[in-house]
Image (cartoon, rainbow, N blue to C red; front, side, top):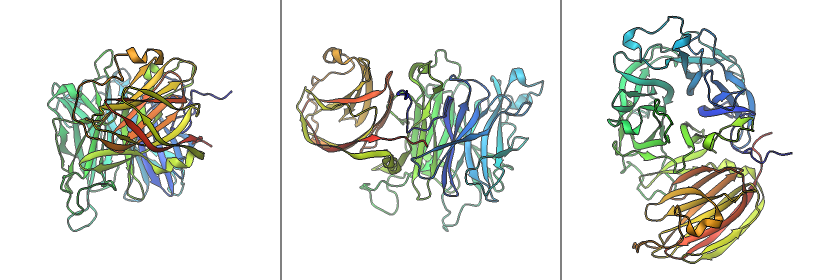
Length: 518
């Protein structure tokens, strides 16, 4: 019997635990994705490995043997933690990752006091090179025995030192490729808050890295004691950007993303991914537009640990880890998956996220067309039934003056639970909640009655809703994104509501989706 719980077009292992995406890269005509993996457990634990999948088209994926595992007695004896993949000066792919060893497993080999962070594990930065550079699948890797960075900067009272990420520096003013390389690491300062550290080298990716100061830091521990999985990538302009070509009047060239971590809190609080838009210079300095007010990457509560790459056509592609809500179904032999690939751009000074076009290759059939469906103020209209647990829906929605918000209610299979997705017109934000549809009109989380008389003008947007069993990812043409997971897979029964004014679906189409796996 088919497993209706299991997502079919999101990257995930055949079995076991998955968390952070690691080292996405395009090499010899193939996309590679690595990820944190524990093969024989559905719970997080030490001794993390790097899982590995490969694709020729970014839509269909194939599992490969795990790339690297912890080495007994080595600097990663208790885990090959997160990192990146890059091409070294000799053209050979290299994995850079944080190796961890528990203090209880260190055999007296603690770092000198000035380098000891005093945390549960000793972190070093390790690397591995592909054994055969001609192998398109990059199946076999050889780990360097010694870390390429053994100690963090001394006497800085850091709260962590992990997750290396290679940054593509802008071309020089003479339009020449940069001579040095930039790497960033997630960190934080005790009693102050999260930080991202910089390292540079003029040589190989596996040696001669020098500490080059702090890229960015926050004087507020409420935004995380440690920033994990830092990602700094260029932001191409969106095709609909109204700002002029030439010099960027918004000053935005890059986006910096970090995962917010509070290592000592029990129970763990919600950990968002936050980001800053800003400018990266050829010297490797990043100036955020608004340091004190980072934005949240995704309006849902199940994503963490971003990673990204630059595709051959220049697009910036990003994935995030989508974790199980409440730990996931314990009877399953898997836990966690990655999001679909998202294309990142800047649109009128704001971050814009949208599914990669390659995902459309998984659509089946001609799709179910929707047009000119109207939803009056305060009403609830059913417009989709029994499309199945996996679909891709693209809608163009308009609203009249005074409309405050509208949304969708997607029902789950064999349970009264539904997922409510709401778009607030004034803030241009998505939000969601789970709900028993029988209690919809009385539910405080979401009401269809209008509240207030805000002077909101009419308008329209595009909305993309992608459902893969229990997973839902929603995107708007304004750039907002929301990820959710329900207790049961969706079954494609859908209703729409409006608050404050009339809403119309001008046009749309819904396609059933096939599997990404051979």
